Amino acid sequence: MSKDLSANLSSEPKLNWINGEWVDSRTYRDSYDPATGKLIGRYADGGLDTAVQCVSSAKAAFYNSDWRTNRQLRAQVLNELAAAFENHTEELVGMLSLENGKIAAEARMEVSGVPPKLRYYAALVLTQSGRALETTAGSFSMVLEEPVGIAGIIAPWNSPVILMIRSLAPALAAGCTTVVKMPGQTAQVNALICEIFHSVNSLPKGVINQFTESGYEGAAYLVSSPDVPSISYTGSTATGKIMMKNGADHLKRFGFELGGKTPMIVFDDADLNKAIPVLAKAVTLFAGQFCMTGSRILVQNNIADPLITGLTQRLSAIRVGPASDLQSEMGPLIDKGSTERVDGLVEQAIASGAKVLLRGGKITGSELSKGAFYKPVLLQVTDHTLSIVQEETFGPVATIQVFDTVEQAIMLANDNKYGLAASVWSTNVDLPLQVSRRLDAGTVWINNWARIHDEFEEGGFKMSGLGRLNGMAAMHDFIQFKHIHHEAGVGQP
Image (cartoon, rainbow, N blue to C red):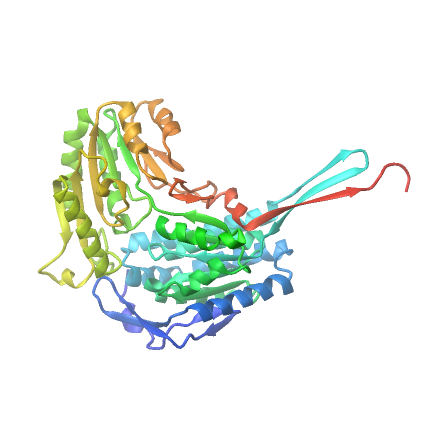
């Protein structure tokens, strides 16, 4: 972050944005900088009443405008949104660093991914097509793709900008109107996003409605409402299960990207000079608050010692600090409560037999102790059943397990309820692809990590989710297929 935005923040609470207008909830909460604990603003905390207003607005826009049938308008809006986000890049990067804690490079990476994603779905709007066939002489069938109606989008706090857009862009492209529930932890960022929406003159009122909520009543209404047939949610597996139960009465559609516990499999012929920096980044990106954090490192026995030595040195040298310090390599966790939670999981693992290779943890005795900073932790484990191995930590904590054979590596990688992503490291031309085909993961990177493209689907196996985001398949959660049959007959009319 190039400048301190906190001095320029308004004392007026940030409002929700419904039907193209700013709406107050009359209930207010404070926003804080996780790097310092300082107050940076206030926001109107939405809830049930706010969600009801949003759904009413989205419903009116869906049925009383041509948004669902006008492809040219949808493509225009998506392209203009892309340009608007580009025009506000620096403001978004600064605010995301201030309120979310991301270092500048990470905030820029998140924000820069928004415009191309919007443009990709703008292009899909104009290439989307149905099918038609003369099944027998004079008998015609066609299949049309139609929007399902209102899409409810529930975004997380760890990457609020890009992960919200990841759901919003295909929903808009499909012709849905939308209600977006944003997290209270990023209320100032959320308000800036609404200002960007507000600046796009071609966007019809009611197509996008957004509210910020610290609780769950508004989100629960979206899940239970018969007027919201599709929900796109990024968050925890436990919450996803609750949503499915609560939406069952209306056969609600759900698109979920949920928890992850990414295995990073390093075979004995891997290039460690290339692997170790990426393994370290896989632990520290977003301070480990990432569903694809490379938190399970599986290394073949022959190279275990040099990998452990190199990775320990690399992680111990990570410069932890605020985004305002351009030398910082990892920012804070989202709040102090998260540091306590993560440290408790680490202590539990150590008590259960995990060997400490690097005991980072909470920072004391310095200016950084005022913030939610947490230094990287590296543990070696032999018991695969430990919670630190099986459960998502959501912090800069990784475990190392040593394996002997390819079969053992695959078994260890798959012995987990999650299946979001995996990474395979080897210079053998065939082995990585052979292993990748056998891994229970929605995404597998070979000699790399966290390479995500708008054109290619992303999502999880097992308890890591339902459906896919990115790529053409992301549209599936927001469209329904209609078969129309017409018996025109043959011969002269």
